[in-house]
Length: 292
Image (cartoon, rainbow, N blue to C red):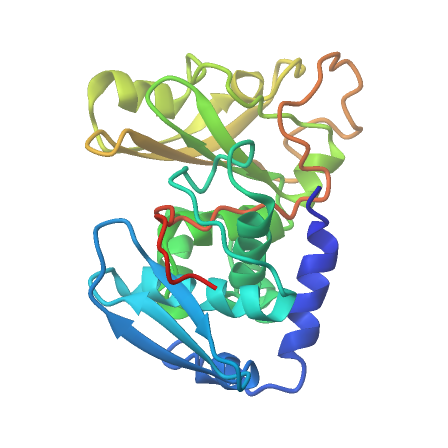
């Protein structure tokens, strides 16, 4: 069982005392601390990185030079996590959102890596400057050099607004990251449920359009066993080529139930009560014989 709170704590302890002012351009502050050299080489499609550790204790972190910069950065921090946490690699060809199938060691290192790339205190200060929006996500992903999904998931988990980031394929909900305020209201986005009728995401999937926004989506469209009479804003993007759809849903603090909703009778498909599970927003690793 992944203890995400402990992993976040380990990452923050690892970062204590480090100069993080230049991590958007250079990750050597992390690689040097684990006595590793970061190099790049051409790899097969889908292969992202591995670590070689020598008998003298020095390591080489190798990432795929053909992948996007944000992907390379995540891969490097993921490998740093393997070294810090002392976890063996077992990179599987499974989607990064599929926690049920993905190895615990890989989930742990994804969590650690997201903390290194988007340090909580700095990221939270930036998130608090404005209400949730795709524009804010684009600003933050450019600043922290991370993927759209990783940034949106992190925003939803850290904002003070009742907010969720939802990842779907063309049929069902695959992943949701909720803010503390939304969790406090007992708002559940049910995993593996069909993409809800009436949502912007469903409309985009049906029409094939790539982007849409609506500020009058009924909250009970998204939240299981939710009282009627409340609206939220949903902003969605749809990528039919990759069979991926993302929604950012949120509402003002005074635009929903004032007390936690208590009539939900089911069992959540994903136990995210700690609010720490976040997408890495990148393709999964493929097997490689050189891994640590």
